[in-house]
Amino acid sequence: MRFLRSILDDRRAASAAEFALILPVFLIFLLGTIDAGRYAWEFNRAAKATQTGARWAVVTDLIPGGDADDGLKNYSFAETGEVTQGEPVDDTLFPGVICTSEDGIAECECAAGGTCNFEVAVDATAQDAWDRLIARMRNIYPAIDSDNVVVEYAWSGLGYSGDPFGPDVAPLTTVSLRDMEFQPLTFYLFGGTIGIPESSYSLTLEDGDGDYSN
Image (tube, rainbow, N blue to C red; front, side):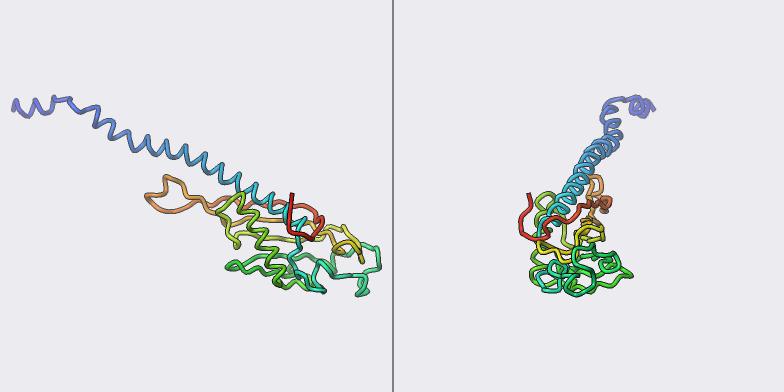
């Protein structure tokens, strides 16, 4: 009886037991704080990469149609008789183009519900332009995959038919980054990721020709 009482009254190692109970909670709190900072950092990198991609897209080669004579870069709405020389191109003739990729292979299509008389297919020049865009974005955020990027060229009302110095349209160019995932430290033991919100950035087309952006 005295032996049992001595065991019950023994307070040695009580601090160790209490520490063992508190340690998991403390570690989760610590790692959670670190993860919050890491998540903010990753989100900011994604946003900055998107901004950089938009800047690159508006001053380097257009993707839709590539270097084809009837691609968006070279297509003349004046020569085809669709728009009078010097007049802006109507949105019915330029409903917009959306470019994506699957397994790194770029593809462009006319915006839903619209008809594009110019070529939007991706040739070797257009694929090279796409790859250079992705490479530029990866300089900021290496985790980006080609399939995470969407480039949209939307009607802006700028530009004019028969422009001898560049494309007849100056579309509003939007680069979007989607389906990015973040791996928290606290999830390593249990698996799973957290999605990073989609980011997008828009600028009006400038040169639409070249292979370098400042």
